[in-house]
Image 1 (cartoon, one colour):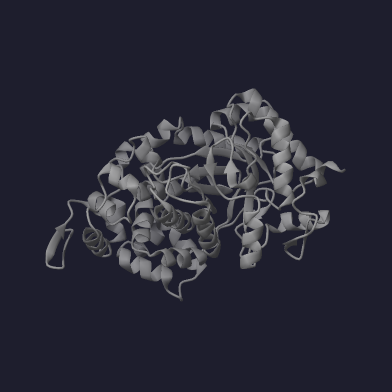
Image 2 (cartoon, rainbow, N blue to C red):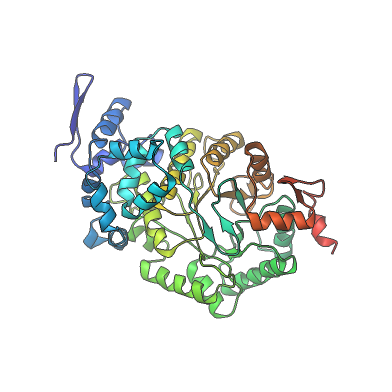
Amino acid sequence: MLLRTKLFGKTYEFRDIRELMGKANEPKSGDELAGVAAESVAERAAAKYVLAEVTLETLRQNPAVPYDQDEVTRVIDDAVNETIYQEIKGWTVGEFREWILADTTTATDIRRISNALTGEMVSAVAKLMSNLDLIYGASKIRVGSHCRNTTGQPGTLASRNQPNHPTDSPEGIRAEIYEGLSYGSGDSVIGINPVDDSVGSVMRLLDMTYDVIQTWQIPTQNCLLAHVTTQMQAMKQGAPVGLVFQSLAGSEKGNASFGVDVGLMDEAYAMAQKYCWPEGPNYMYFETGQGSALSADAHNGWDQLTLEARIYSLAKRWQPYQVNTVVGFIGPEYLYDAVQITRAGLEDHFMGKLTGIPMGCDACYTNHARATQNDIENLAVLLSAAGCNYFMGVPMGDDVMLAYQCTSYHDAPSLRQTLGLRPLPEFECWLEELGLMRNGRLTEKAGDPSFFLRR
């Protein structure tokens, strides 16, 4: 295969698809760390030019990890709709990009094609897009789901109530939940990252969050972001689990570093369908992030964007209620500054929607990254314009347990009011019944968590 072009009098030639994909990626510190990034802007432009002429069939034939060596590759490839694939396999990546962005291409068209895509195809087309292309392309695609409420509808923006606590204090977490609810945060999920991953501690917090939901008849679900095996034990012992959570990677080796494989996740999914207390049918919650495979030395020499895209193709197997890219959490070793974090957030959201999964984003950064709260708010505005399903809600945007900065309880209502968006419909009705919201806007009662102590 000849992967070569001449640019400004210099010939650029790429050994294989793996090298081409790495060098066509937008600048990422993780790719530089891995030695797969372009060495200059000119080389990056040349790689994009060559990639635009590569066919989707070629990308399917060159997965990041060979089919016989990796179960993630097998899951993705086996799920390809062969009838639809035959229609598009001859498209070049450049043609695919133009098709997605064309005014005549509808959301229904894109959702149909998503059933014939692999992660490599999705990653490749994202590499050819500007930030505005990613926003516009994603805005055309709506992917919904249902557990106790309905995500992904046009004109809605949900918020995960994330009441993390440095000691897993049930009463401290309960107070944070009430504060978030008073601002209209919690329609996607009340989800806690526990300090203690033991079954007993996880069950205690599941019981507490379930009690809050039932006492106030909140149309939402709960989730403890413990390891999936801990949650499975809790379900077996009768704990009220709303969503089953797990972090995923884009290769078999990467998932092994998380202590999971496809068989285990199949088992967890079957248990969720049997034991989760909401009506469903979507019960799974996955988190991802560019650089996860590289941090585990499980990227097989490929760029971090492609490994991220493969996660979305894998996650689709379990029909998730929501998927969340924790875009700046892994650190500046992988996304160095606000420019790279913003780009990655837009890429991930677009790729998730193009794959056909309900996509949200933790617009966030760690304190040793070159980013500020203003940068994260900028990203949240861009993603809201792109149709992002949900963001995080954390007191003051400062997670005291995970020690990172993200969006606050205040941010979702501000974004809703700025862009004419609403909470998830079932949740908005509940807020109106309590007098916390009227005509899509918070009332004077909002923002006071003691409201929930007066009944």
